[in-house]
Image 1 (cartoon, rainbow, N blue to C red):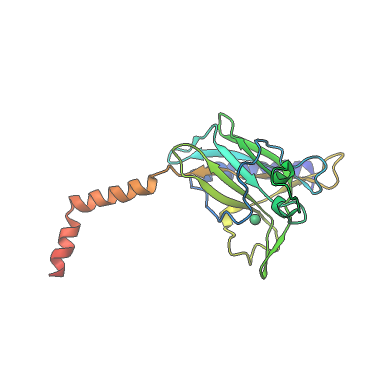
Image 2 (image 1 turned 30 degrees about the vertical axis):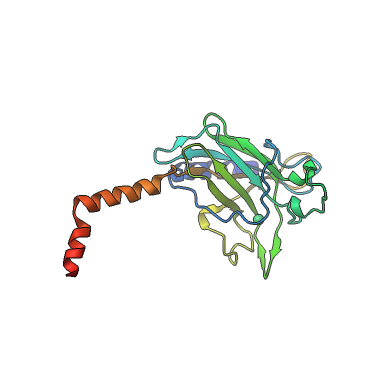
Amino acid sequence: MSRRRSLRGVGLRSTRSLLARCIPTADNIRGPFYRAGAPFRVRLADEDEPGQRLTISGRLTGLPDCRPLGGAVLDVWQTNARGLYSNLLGIRDPHDPKTFRLRGRFRTSAEGFYRIDTIVPGHYPLGFLTRPRHIHLVATSPAYRTLVTQLFFAGDRYLARDPWVKDELVIELIGEDSPGTPGPRYHGHFDIALEQSGAREEGRRGRALVRDALNLDYLEKFRGH
Ligand SMILES: [Fe+2]
């Protein structure tokens, strides 16, 4: 793919993500391979980690006003290129830092931006399924509902059968030739929007107040007699 086509593609997606930012990002299961306490770093993959280089960047905002959430923490984990999480790589010492391979936490910038440098994760088998390539993340920010989700990549042949895939969590990757790197470097853009914590509870309280004001409970009971 030519450089010009790649850049134009990134621009198009950025415009779309700006429009979509006010919609809360869909959640997803955390899965069994999370490890608490990952080191703070944005470079998840060392130079010698086998796999195709991948950068994911985006912006974290909060509903309802799409305010950028600076200083929020993202906790990210994924498999290596062969589809193995660090928990499964046969490392016996749980204190060995390598058990946090391809895992990291980091804070968003003051304007809510983030960027990670990693590799394209692999497929892995789960029962009768093969899971599509994905990256797990947890986003936390004070006063906002913690989001646990997964990020998938368009064109993956295992997307269609996976019960956890949600269309809004599938992003396109743009490949760009890069001198000194075997194969293209991929880039994906993923904006995240968090709901305010208590938003649903406030909604429920609001609806209860309206019911009280209109005497709906009373009228329903009255109608039942
Ligand atoms: Fe997973």
